[in-house]
Length: 329
Image (tube, rainbow, N blue to C red; front, side, top):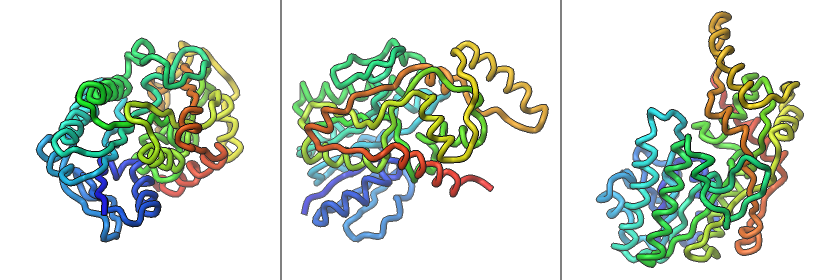
């Protein structure tokens, strides 16, 4: 019976990948490396070990005997003052997993990155895996820079240490189960009436359940050293908001304004809202990001992995339902 190690099993993607893996591969054993308690899966095939990807010794122990690794550990942080933990977790955590693979002779690993390391620009061009890294576009945001550096590091290990690593790069993941609001925060802001104007850019969204299947397919069929964009449809923010409005019953903004005016309006609203006992939660980072086009072309994953995606309205509706069910009183 094979042993699969998973880091990041309690995250948004991990919560969907784990049960899918257990269903798809009934003979496998799974070991979860968790900083705190595990995801609470009652299955004798699942073992939870305490540890942190930032600790090389703990990663070494967790990887011992593992035939395969899904490396998904990471988190989202938009405050520049809190940037260092991003680099520590994403870059050094990746280095630790790579060194553990070298030490134990792991047969194959799938590392989860993000489409935002390359599939983003100021124009509505669909970018595929051949697009260069987008340092000049995302230079303000340490989350994307840290994921970019982690991916480059892993690819160095593939080339120079011959490690059997495949990368998957999901776009914006939506769907049920995002209890930390790591990917669905902007949908929640829309539901709460915090998005008052329509951004000028566009996004690519993928259902987290489809991204989980794509990640498993990458383990089964992915070519070592290759990257696979896992995305669904490319939508302007106008189209995304229109669909979200129709599915939620929340009125859509009436105006589309340029970036400078959105930033100015947000600055004013952050001062005015407290006067009436409210807060304006939309941050400048989200506003700046929404002026870009996060479009990607996932035809490579569809062709080589058999990756498929569902109707985006199903994904948006499931996201809205989950956010409303789990909203604070």
